[in-house]
Amino acid sequence: MISTAGYLSLRLQRTRRSILALWLLLIGVGLSFLAFRYQNVGTTHALTGLVNFLYAPLAVLVLFGVWGQTVQDEVKGLLALGRAEKDVALTFVASNVTASAAAAVVMTETVLLASRSSSDPSLLSDMVVSLGVSALVGASYGAYFSLFALLLRNTRVSLLLAFGLLWTISSVPGMGLLFPHVHAVSLLGGTQAVGFHDVVTERASSLWLCGAALLFSTLSFWRITRARSFRV
Amino acid sequence: MILPGEEEAVLRVSGLSFRKRELEHFECAKGTTQLVSHDVAFRCHLFDTLALLSRPGAGSLLLGARPLQRPDLALLGQSPSLPQALTATEFLIESNLACATNERDARATLMAFGLREKCDTALGSMSPLASKAVVLVATLASKRPVKVLHEPLSGLAPEVVPYVKDALLSMRHGICIVITENALPLAQVAHRTVHLLSVAPPRMVAVVIVADEIEKLTAHLEERKLVYEVRGNTVRIRSGKLSEDLPVLQRCILAAGILVHSLSIEQGAV
Image 1 (cartoon, rainbow over the protein chains, first blue to last red):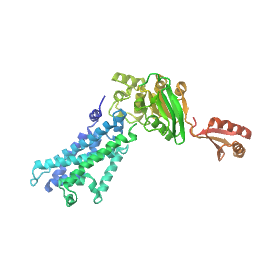
Image 2: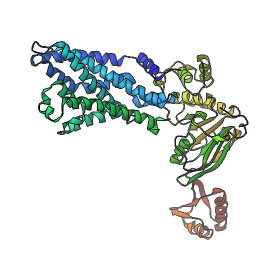
Image 3: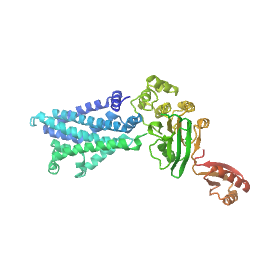
Image 4: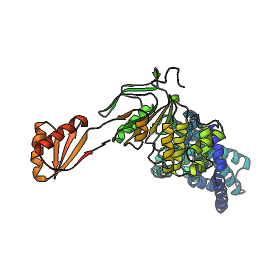
């Protein structure tokens, strides 16, 4: 009997176009281009741009890449096979969070390498710091969009709702603290974070990102295991 | 799954009620029981209750002497979701419904339902009609003792329907199939095999007569305490029990001596 993870790998193998790999490649090339444009103003700006504009879409692409465009139906399909709800929920959450975090790390390190200037600190320390931060942000975005992908049967509408919330609430002064990207910019030392450190420390931002990833993952898990609509 | 001595009465349902409609009692020894109601919410509630998705407010569901449990059930929802990366054959093997243990069995089962062409097609690339047919085949081929099918023929590929009817007729002893429907598309199956249980809602009998004669009829209806309403040249009589009310109405019409253009039963007539 095929396991949930086994089914997922089968699904990835049978995807007509390897959506995930294709998109990651395209984004990588695009980012490198962007990064070179920003080169005269430094790595920080390139990373800030990455955080602000690309982590969230990247998480969505990962979600689509792993689960296809009908996320809720795929999860229900696995449950229809008779797999345990907890098993399916755990695989769903873990695959999204891990893949999203991995994609974010790859992108961040690519940008970091491409946009370095002579005035930047040592490459190794930059890479280590940005690795931790990007993994955290990728994971929290992955969990955030996973939850929304499970809310409605139409995944696109669900994710548009998620994006809407992200951008509208983030633009309200102070409310941006609820979402990952402000914390990510702060941790990466972006210009938007001027004065931010007085309110929220780096440690608090890191903890918040961990907490957000956990919270959204738990809610996704709960949605699959408890919602009646997933059982038939 | 079937316990010794259970062949006489597989499933016993009693005392279910929802929104003033009640399913007092039925037993399904073998074969098919259709639960017919025009009320969509009631049908969905019945399915959820029989599928153990929602707990009945009152009443009981027994399989033999013990309560019905999820591993006893093979379910077909109205629009089932499927693992889209698997082919129909793989679905039958991987499903926990125990309908096929190897590829040969799975292919034979699909072919028996006229789905030879779908054997190697991924479920995600099938039409909804075909994918529902695959789930229905898996449900019917399952060795679980109770199968609950929610409107099995709606949204099903027409070429599969005769195979489904044949399969229902040839179900082995000890298998109980409960179908929730709004009409009787499987009437001959139910008639030949087991119980036909109609969950009758309150109905209206519409009598169309010449407008001038309406008063003659209503006078007799009032005399016999039938509840009615008049719209244009149509008199609608509310009926809780058609078997009792129809003869009374017939007597009213005869007594009034009027000409009836048409008589029809509305709202969930079966």
